[in-house]
Length: 428
Image (tube, rainbow, N blue to C red):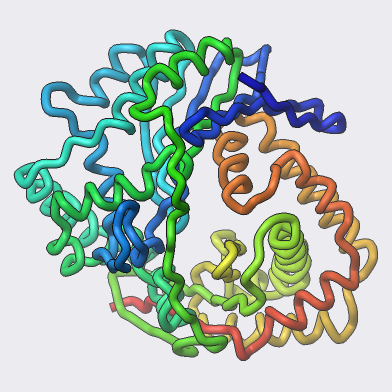
């Protein structure tokens, strides 16, 4: 079996990888001085993958919203034992998450890595769905959805996505809706599982002081099939218009001070790899310069009492969608929204200073290097970038390649009033 290696001399990091005969890709980042070990088993399948052609079939189907998250919950179900108890017996931590683009199962441990790895691979690869346990899970997830619907922090974010997007499923809660989960059944779960939990659509990433060859032997032995699927997954993408759905959404909930999300819908989409990551880093530099703690915008609004230290920002970008958000609490969210747009226009008119540009690049470089000291963050970031068709080890090279011209073009095409919406949760 051929073991491939990717090295970064500047970071002094290496990633080893193997592709099994069934298409499963296994990665390992050695951390010889670390006591903690970590593994994450992920499928390139998330909440937005609701319309597709199931493997072995010919017709397109659309499954209920929230089914990827529902499936994640159900994989922890075993007929005789509790998966959580089994990991606890080994002294390890186990968890899972569903995002818009992936579902992942993970554990961290100090000892007994091989036993933990075997347990992880076994439970992810052996679904146990019955009519009874599916119906039981609906009640559990319905309570989860109701809880989030009553949570102001979640509602202001969810409403912002609904204001930005007309058709794209990124606007739908990852857990789905109370109505959508009612139509989930055992048969649909198996069709989704057999399509997206296909080894060639998955990867397993390990990090720590691990015997890689022994780990590969365990993973290979536990595979249900040794043959690679000849058919790729056919995902049907929704057509999303190049305008926002609504400019403002307001709701009243139990809060003492209004919450706000200012969203910018990214219309520059349709590609992945280094070009996507270049755009992502450009955007993060821009947001830091325009709205970071040292920016005039933040200092002025903070002194005026229009924002507090809960103010923050984020960019989330993938091949077929992307958006930036500014979020916080304010006695006057509409004024913050107005001033944010004015600030963008002012800074672009004056031009970004070379000092601000270089300082912010160094700041992002520092964030990235700090993340390298956390094996949890490393594993998650590596997988996120892999699904964007990019190696995380090349991040600093892309960051250093960004120019002032790149920033100016990015701001001009993205951060403007036409792509902007405002979500507010007011006190009842």
